[in-house]
Length: 389
Image 1 (cartoon, rainbow, N blue to C red):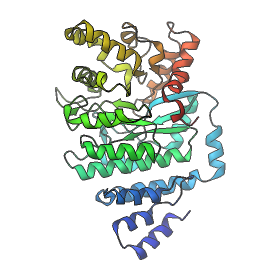
Image 2 (image 1 turned 60 degrees about the horizontal axis):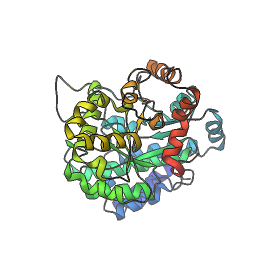
Image 3 (image 1 turned 120 degrees about the vertical axis):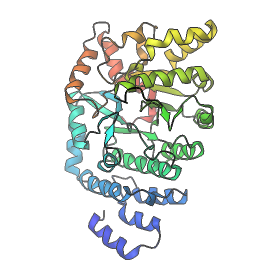
Image 4 (image 1 turned 90 degrees about the vertical axis):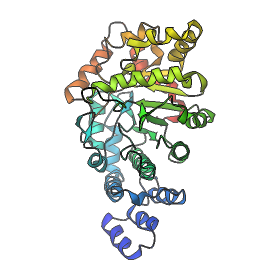
C-alpha cells in the first residue's frame, strides 16, 4: 500500500480531474476493501466529494488507520482481545474530521473516538461484535444543501466501511442516507447495502424537519420495503424540529416518542411490512404515551400497531434503561425476544456504561437465558447472515 506522503507526491504530479485527485489520496486497499474504487464509483454517480473541505482529512485518516490495520500483529491482537459474545447494535464512531464539522451533539461536546478505545471498551463488557452507526446529525450537517449532504453521506459510508474492513469479525455498520432527498437517499442506500455491504440503514427521527412518517419520504420507504433482504432501519434521535428552553440530550428521548408516534399515525409502520425497525433507548419516552396515543385510533388499529411493536420493532438498551425504563415496554407485553443490547459508546459519560450494563444483566425479572438472548441471540435472529460472525 502506498504511503500517504507518496500519494501526495503522486497526486501533485498527476492531478487531472477531481476524481483523480481523490483517488491519488485514497489507499488502494484496506484489508481487502478498495477505497480507490469507491471514489471512482462516487464520481461516476455524480457525487462530488471534493465539495467537502473534510474529504482530504477523511482519506488521510483512512490511510493512517489502514497502515495500522494491515499490520498482522495488530490485527491478531484485535482479533484475540475479547472472549465474550455480546452484540452491540447501538454504538457510534466519531472520525476526527467529523468532530471538526460537529463539535457539539445535543448540546454537549462531541466525544473523541478511536478504534483502539472502542475495542478496549468492548472487551470490558464482553462485546465481540459492534454494529457502528453515526449519531446525529449524520449527513445533515449542511441544512438545505443537497449536494453537500449527498457527498457527506457517501464519505461517511466509505469511511465506516473502511473501519469495518480493518476488523470484520468485530465490526459491522449501518448505512447513512441523505434524507430528505429521496432519490439520492435511494441511490446511497442501494450502493451502501449492495456494494459496501452495510447490514442496515440508519436514519434520524427527523431529517431537516421532516419526520419519518411525512408523505414526502414515502418513495424512500417504498424502495426499502421492495428489497428482498428484509431491511433493518435503525432510528437514532436528533434535535427536534422545535425548541423549548433549548435542546439538551433529554430531548432525544422525547424525539424518539415523536418519531414513533408519527410512524404509527402516518401508517408507515403498518404499510411497509417488509421493514424491521430498531428503536433506541428502549423507545425513549414512547412507551409512556403509547396507550394514550393509539387508543384514539380505535380498537382495530390499536391491535394492529401493538402487533407491529411486538414483532417488527426491536428495542435497544442504550443508556441506563434497565431495570426501570424497560418496564414500560414489558407492560405492553412486548416479547423479550424484541430486546437488544446497545451501549451508546462513546456518547454517554464513562461512568454510565458499566452501571447500565449491570442494571440489565442483574435485572431480577430476566433469567439467564433471556439475558443471553438480549446480549446476542436476539440480534443474531434479527440480522441473520448480514452479520459477519
